[in-house]
Image 1 (cartoon, each protein chain N blue to C red):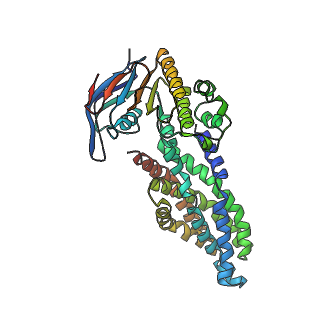
Image 2: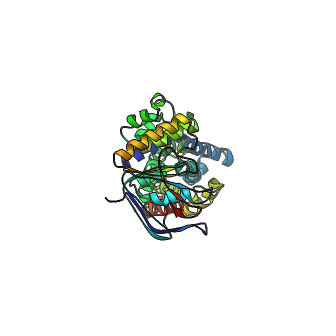
Image 3: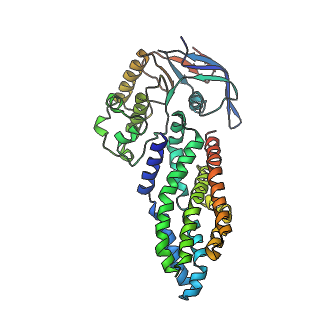
Length: 187
Length: 212
């Protein structure tokens, strides 16, 4: 089975500071992996590196098609939510439904709350059809209902052969493999 | 995705104040007769140059909204993840920016020229020089928008970058308007094409650099 994401002996330096080095792991279909660590330990940088938005100082990263949800919603503020999501995917309806956003389809993005925006960017990822999901602090601003819906989406995604890499200092629902960036070791 | 991106930016441009630079352009053109006096022949002589200065300063206004909102919202990152190269993003931005700037400025040049008593042959040359020059101006604006995206006081820095770089365009456009020489027109077109050809690569590299 080919892994959907593979880090081989990766080191990352940002702003002159070494965030981590010699990090190796592979993420197979059906697996979920949580990156944890205190603020500033490089969780988001690791996600952006996995996405290909940052370059590693050393080592190699292999990745399959992916979708990223970070703190940038990437949705047109003036458009209704449904149309803003359609810019990225022709039919976001199922993903919107799964995150409880159907009622908000006609509401302009600029009027959405932080939690609703988080749901919207998760819906963008869920609608993408990409096998690899990268979620940066997916629980930020989500209420308990949102967290439960995200958990269900992740379960379904794993069952269909996808994989999820999430960065969070909070406890995520379900069984996750873990990397702790504080010690740089893996469980 | 590329067509969708251009359409999106054109729509955002018209929804987000594409008329502002045009209003500014007309306002500056209105100020010239107040400052110079109502001497029609003098106005007609300095008019084309004054219009070009108005066009250059008007081109500065939209720079801050060209790329920075998309950078801050993560749109540029998502486009890259959807397989759109940074240079392609920049080229789309240039096309969309010109569409919301060039034709409007062209139309606004008619009343602006009337205010400055420009008509006949000189009017035709002013309009032609606007057609030729605005694509280069749009390209320059996007390149500088990419270079300054995310910086504090980006708007002021952008002005300091754009105006010197636009000097060749201004020189040849004004020379063409003044004496109608084909050489000046060719040189204006050459500068405009040079800006159009180089800007996507400059802007693409700047977008890439802003991610580190």
